[in-house]
Length: 158
Image 1 (tube, helix red, strand yellow):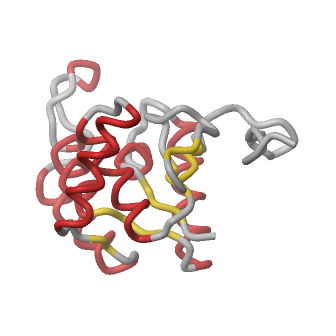
Image 2 (cartoon, helix red, strand yellow):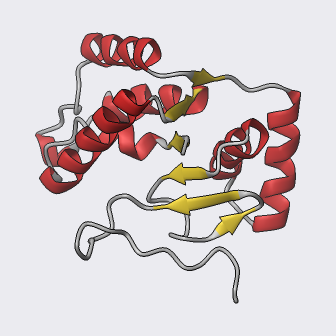
């Protein structure tokens, strides 16, 4: 199953402040790269660079990555994964999604990439885990697992 990756997955891969999330993000991206089962929205690459280069108080004022490394990592992401770019259909869907699901604009825009491109899943910690937004189900890969499985509610009630 192809999934859309949110910015937080990309950022946690480089964030030593959260070692368990860092491990999960690294393993998830490696596994999905091998399976060719993931797409990255253009928006996530822009947000990734902005987030990892921002100064952090809890890192003595330094960023997660210096700009040179952040740019190099963004280019590497673009080489390794299919990148989805916005068009009129994505923007229109994002407007509808923001209104229908009361999502913040950037989350609605991210959801629209998945909805328009037929991706059934968004991997993100920013959406309600297991909730369906149109034809897209949100899954939080950072939730604690039981036996290695993230329990999701059934797609439809019996």
